[in-house]
Amino acid sequence: MKKSKVETVETRRKLVDTASKLLLSRGLATTSIGDVMSAGGMTQGGFYRHFASKEKLVAEANDAASAQLQAALAAAALDKSPRAALDAVVALYLDPAGELSALCSLAGLGSELRHADGEIRSVVMQGHARMVDFIAGRLQALGVPDHGGVASAMVSTMVGAVTIARLAVEPATAQAILDNARKLVTAHNKD
Image (cartoon, rainbow, N blue to C red):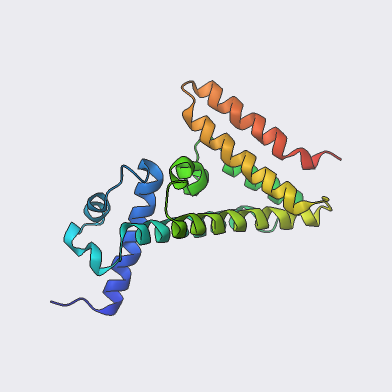
């Protein structure tokens, strides 16, 4: 029996969501098409009905994760002053539980992404630019000079801190890395 267009779209969305979670938790190299299809409740043979290549799926999965990250940032900042919004976003991103940073391809896949094809890197960098723009808007409202440059530095610091904290063997070391990054990126609060 042939699937309807609605069912096909829903299946594709489910596979992108599944791929996003698997890729961000396991990595690009260790997540196969078979892994994604199996986790999505399908056989590997059905993959090419939905995607032209693994790279296309990875690009879509990264875009979906970026959209979820942006929605979470917006929700954290909702109805807050620019300063309170920044503090909330930084605290959420640098939370050791990592729910928000777990959606960030840069923190989760950064070292692998440099070897990815141009389309995947482009999608990830668009997500980076959206995060920088989001933070820059709040910094601009605070009157921070070079708000775009400062926002870029803040995002780079947060991504790097999360990446390194995940490598730490001792939880206290990981926490110290995140705490120090939080102090640095919230320096905009000093009057």
